[in-house]
Amino acid sequence: MFDIGAAFSGTYAEARGKFVAAARTRVPDVEANTHPTARGAENEALAIDAALVGEIASASLLVVTSGMHGVEGFAGSGCQVALLQDDVVANAIAHAKIAVLFVHAANPFGFSHLRRVNEDNVDVNRNFRDFDSTAAPNAEYAAIHALVVPDRWPPPPEITQAIGNYLARHGMRRLQAALTRGQAEFADGLFYAGRKPAWSNLVLRELLARHGRERARLGWIDLHTGLGPWGHGERIYNGPDEAAAIARARHWYGDDVTTMYDDTSSSSLLTGASFHAAIESCPGVEFTGITLEFGTKPQQDVFNALRAEQWLANHPDTDVATRQAIKQQMRDAFFDERDVWKAMVYAQARATVLQAIHALAT
Ligand SMILES: [Zn+2]
Image (cartoon, rainbow, N blue to C red):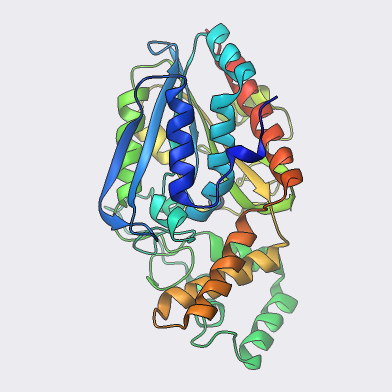
């Protein structure tokens, strides 16, 4: 048994190195899609790396992505490295005769800089929108923006009181829905969808089109953290609101697959999610997508880490000690250093990937 803890990393650069090394033990070529301008926290280059393993010309492709939400990549990258080192997984891929595309750090800027968003404060998983037609403004977010991202941090007592009043009146679920649906009105706010396709969006669409559009079937597992009970992996359906596709996801993974289209998921209904890239890049291909979401901290702690970090981004002259404390709080909200958490996360990622390989077998 290999060392699961060693598959995880302390920085984006370390994670990238481990991913490339692990992938090269399976295939000669790892494709680097280097960001044209942005640099990392240590001034390192930033890239979305991709490795295609298994039966390259198969009718079935499984895509496994990490780091769509930057800092969440610490967990997803560790899972990808472990999956690439895992001979049980490699043998399953070979027997099923499928191709598997590992896409590392879909938002490398956020990963390196310990942000959930990208170089333009954009939530990449809200950015897969139709920018030609104007989306309805998120009025519920507009009503609370000034409370959620206040001018001062820690927030003054009247702001905390106002949030408390909102929660007492509407509840956490309503606050989550207002926030996480995505908004395009406040570029300095949370869950900002952006006003044009992000670099990560364009790279993912190109990767999916090139590797996916000639296949018969496409499965996608997108690795995330920050929602749900500690160490639990929730399989959240990530696709269009179509009964047959939801039923197929449950057939693959089990009836505990949740969806944002009813109230089964810890995720609220959101717009501009990543699955649009798959169905638009690979028309006519049978698509089955899920988000695998691992719980870290209580929801209120994750919420406050996001607020603090957005405030920090809006105040770049903040002193070093405050900056470091907020960044540590952010990392801790989306990743757990303990081996027991990593073991729980990898066990569930591994089981989910093995289920997908089985379902896609040709
Ligand atoms: Zn996420």
